[in-house]
Length: 214
Image (cartoon, rainbow, N blue to C red; front, top):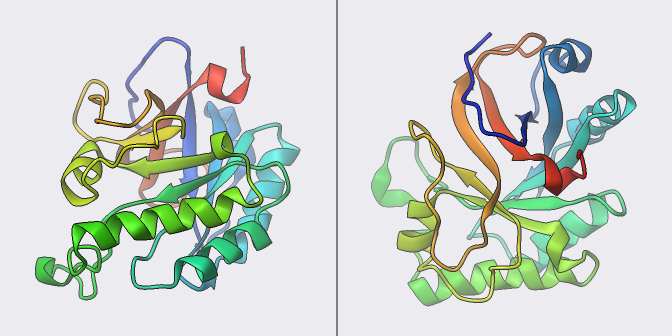
């Protein structure tokens, strides 16, 4: 089991995605995991393991939400429709904003980088706008690094009210990103070890107030 950073008034969380081995949520909860974020899908693909992960986490009283890997090369209305069509009513969802490589390790072929800045921002706005049709704005969060938000997406205005799940490794805490609200979750490692989860785990610290755990 990994050694985790400590920040007052936070709890440990894990994000789950399709795996050949189903995680043991009982073991993870016993190890201190209080929050489970499961992958809902990406592009036109809906991850059918999502419901299983959420149901198992819910049965153990773990706070939970979904995340959607945003693809800039897929129609935003189709992606947004997949989100609102498959997300359980009342559940939060985070849009996963990060490099999306056409070819592994080929930095010149990232789908986001292929687009103009104006187009990148239009993709983001389209996804959020479509999701807002069925999901309250404060239930639509954004997952990204400070660098990706500011240097790839250009730190567009108008997203300060959306919960920010910050991804920053090797730091004591995330640095504030321009035009984003204070972080509610901080993914501090992608190579964590936790009982009940096979392989490297993406682990986060979450503010208790965000989940109503205080």
